Image 1: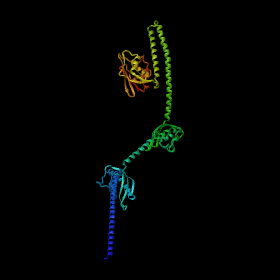
Image 2 (image 1 turned 180 degrees about the horizontal axis):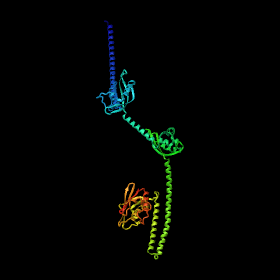
Image 3 (image 1 turned 45 degrees about the horizontal axis):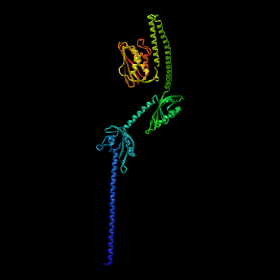
Image 4 (image 1 turned 60 degrees about the horizontal axis):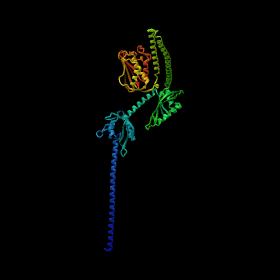
Length: 531
């Protein structure tokens, strides 16, 4: 072999080695690339498995925590899976019991259930299915079901799934609501008050009473607005209240207004308007209750006139009483003076009988003056507007009365306890106690007379009592003695007006007066005065 052939072979061998080396390098690169791809695929598969597991866990959580019952069954109705809510509703645990939905169907709803199942197979789903079902522990329940068909890859139905909601209580509440609604409608329709439902000033609905008040039919009223049956000025005045309702400041208001009747006349009505609001607080409707007060206002007008006339008459009587008392006192004083002059100038001429007669005239004149003074006192006891009220220490006042009223030595006037300080007109309060104490003194028949004053606090009123051990008062006189010129017996020192004055003063202080008495034992007068 020549050297040239050897060189050729060497070069060929070198090229073969170089090619083999290059092939090995390429194979190593491809192996590394394949390994990296394999690793990436492995990591991707692991991620997919994790995500699938996570999604399955999430779906299982959603499935288990559905508020409504979830049921999965095969095409024959055998239940394959139920969530917790379904277990609670139907009372079955399918891990321990076999269950077919056919056993749950209420017998009277069987045909309806079969028709609905056929619709499910045909259309692939149904909604708003409502029927009764038997449950293991909860009796018969009414349920609402939305269901859909599950198909295999060849689109052949292999099962069904549904969301089941128990609506038993909801239907019961709806039934109760409807019954209450009917009852309310009956009440509204038969109410003596007119009732109108309005929206934005437009009349929506009225009851019979409102229709009768205005003389319109229901169809005529729903074509009108509130302003159509209101006087313009009064409607404008009410708009301010309506604005306050719409702004949420108030929920209701009451107003007296006139309504225009179909015949052109008007009627006065007390109208109470209340707002019915949406969930966001805006006004959805206004409900108005209308009460006819036309006659009531005419009573009130007459009463105001009577009060005015009565006040005028009372004032005239007071003026008359003052005039009469003044006119009577003047001649009485003149007669009294003349009698004294006669006694002084002709005392030696008159015998004892004559002088006794003159003394009787003097006593009669004194009694008449007391009577006139009592009448004047009675007429001057008017209303609270004329009272000059201040704090009055009753302990001091009683001591002053003791010095004014002539109390014989055998009679003791005392207080059972410390008397309170009250707020009132001192002249009137003095008249009150002085007349009651004086009355007890006048009718005292015991050798040892006792008059005792007591007090109790009754929150809104003072309760006083004046007890004596005098002659007592028979039951038939207990009411009469508080009237003018009514008295027990014929005591010359009694005018018959004192207790009438007492009653009038007690009435003035929004109190009551009564007595308990036993003839020959004594009497207790009780009276209250508002604080």
